[in-house]
Each structure stands twice: as C-alpha cells, then as structure tokens.
Image 1 (cartoon, helix red, strand yellow):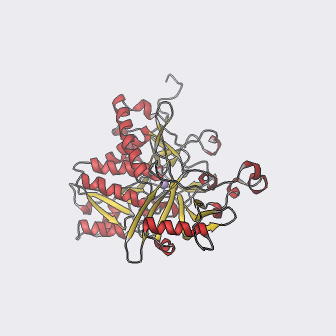
Image 2 (cartoon, helix red, strand yellow):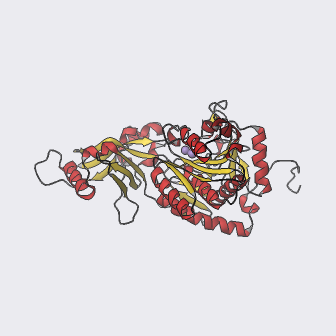
Image 3 (cartoon, protein in one colour):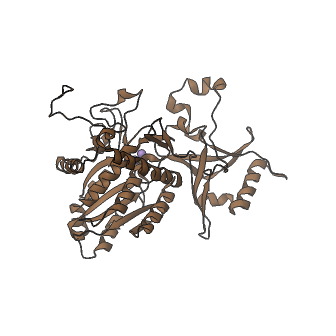
Length: 447
Ligand code: MN
Ligand code: MN
C-alpha cells in the first residue's frame, strides 16, 4: 500500500519489472530472430516461405493454401473431436501494390514511373520520399513464375514516391487537410530516367521495357498477371539507447505471426490438437480464398485430421487466440486514448475483450468466462499482460480476424503485442511485448 492504492485495485505492471533478468536476456535473444524474419518476410508470400522453412526444419506438419496462408499442426493427446487450440495471425501488411498496367513515362518530368494502388489503411503522406523495395511474383502466360525482390541488398537500387518541395507546396498541399494533401493517384513510384536510343515515341519507357525484358524476360503485358508490392526498404533495427524497442516495416501483424510460429514449433505433447494458422488479406477486410473468412481451409483441415468427426461440433469445442496487434499509447497524442483501458509498450501482451467501433459495432466480444480463463492461464504462467481498447469511444476503432472465427462457434479472444505508429512504414514495438506474446501463445497451446 506504499503508493496509496488498495491491494484490491487493478494495476498495470511493467513487463520489464515482472520478467526476471534471465527472461529479459531471452527476450533480447528472441528479438534477434524476429528482426531477421522481418527483413526476409516483407510480403505474405515471403512469410509463407519462411514459415514453411521453419516447419520443415523442425519436422512439423504444415499445410499451405495458395502460397498465401498456412497452418502448422501438432496432434494432441486428446482426440480431434474434443476440439482444437488455434492461434491465428495475419501475414499481410499495408503497402503500395502495382496496378495491372503500371508502367508509364511522364514526359514533362522526363521520368518513368509505376502506377500504384495502395493496399490497406495507410496515411498516404507517410509513404512518399522513403526508399521502397519491390517484392512479388510475375506469372507468365505459360504459368512460369518469376519471383521478384529488388531493393533489399544495399547494392540494389531502390524506388521512391516523389513529393513536392516546400517552396511550391503552399497552394497544392499546405492548406489542405492532411489526408487530402497526398492523393492516392499521386503515389506513383519513380523507376528510371534514361531514354532509349532509336525512334521511339516514349524513349524512357522503351528503355525500361528493354531492361525488364533483358533482366527478367518479361513484357509489359506480364504485369497484368503479377503481384508486385512496393514496401519500405528499411531494415529492422533496435530503437533507443537501451535497445528495448524494434523499429521495422510490417510488424502488424508479423510480430504476432513470428511469436505464434515459434510457439507452435516449441510446444511439446499438447493436450489438444494445436494449430498455428497464418492468413492473408486481413488488412483489406479478410476477403478472398486465403483469408480468415475462407473457413473451408480450416474445415477441410479438420476433416483431414480425422475424417470421422463432425466438423461443426469440433469448431464449437475449439478455442482460439486471434493474435493481432493493438495500438500502443502514442506520445504527443495521448488525448485519443482512454488511458485506463489503453495498452502501452513494455507492459506485455495485450488482451482485448472486444474490438470494433462506435457501440462495439462489428466486434468480436469475448465472453467473460473465456476472458477469465485466459487471464488465469497468463497469471499462472507469470506472463506480463495488459488490457487494451483501440482509442476512446467514438474516436475510431478497428477489427481483427476474431469475428470470422467466433461466428464459426469457437471461443475467440484478441491477444497480441502493442504497436506504436501502426500501419506506418516504420512501426515500433517492444522486445518484452514480443516475448510476452510468444510465452502467451505457447502457454495457450499447451493448455
Ligand atoms: Mn493486424
Ligand atoms: Mn492492420
């Protein structure tokens, strides 16, 4: 009672204080592997490949859906009909996608550019004047797939969206609202400037086409059957004098994906059949055949595990952690948070009973019973955790994949790391929250 607080009061505790010295050392070591993962898996397809590699190395069963989603499975002591324990994370992140016919020459500025259509919820002004790398696949008409990654090696060229100098932006940008200052159609990427020799109408475009054909054997039409993503070319780095934080692109939701991957790789002899499920397209509403809404993948997986079971009854008995990030209280903008219920960096994995917006609309609202169960589980294992809610009531909001699984009849709760500057090209997380998330998923899978 030295701080004048009743012993019955709820108090948020720092993970830095709760963890032992040895655990903090483990958290820092865990973060090293995580940074490598972030650097090598900047797209959903690359994340799937890293997950496959890790599963194969540990001789774990993995099922892959279209190079965009995957599930690692470990049978439990109890039969499949008793239900599963599932951790679901998403491996897509906001970025700039190339359009179908992206290449053009801007003859006024004497540059060649790629047209983009942004993917997910971005603040457009954050994506100009930063180095971008291009990742993805180009599929030729004969089905041959060209895997593309340029801008990650320091000897590689990078790409960039230009912005107007301050001397001239007064009328065009400075007096506009911040979300109108940069338009979606202004997020085109500069890709070259040398004109071709010869009698071409657009010489710079002709030179780029020539180069693309020489280097990658592709033509302009091949972009129509491509998925190319411009992502920040930054490497993951430690942030702060104390190196306590990690700055990198794509931590929503690869921080939870990495923690969930290592949790399932490390779990031994679980009670129930356990599954770590990685999905795509969360950032655009979980639509499509590799997303959280494509429940056929999970259904066929259960049927494959035990053909005799009634899949619906297995789903009803299953328990799920929706492993997605939560907003961290942001310095200088604390007004948008209701601080008693907001999560902050360094206080452990965040348990969000509900998501949604304005009147809990569109939320998965976990039952008090399930919240109690998870709370008890985390406390018993001495894992730092905190509650979280995305901002003040009616200030905004957001969703996760939780609702798509709870509607299948499963118990679902959101549990993931807090993130600063979420959806920006440089998101910041805490090493102890990453480690708390890993321990939380591991404990849940074992339970
Ligand atoms: Mn997310
Ligand atoms: Mn997100």
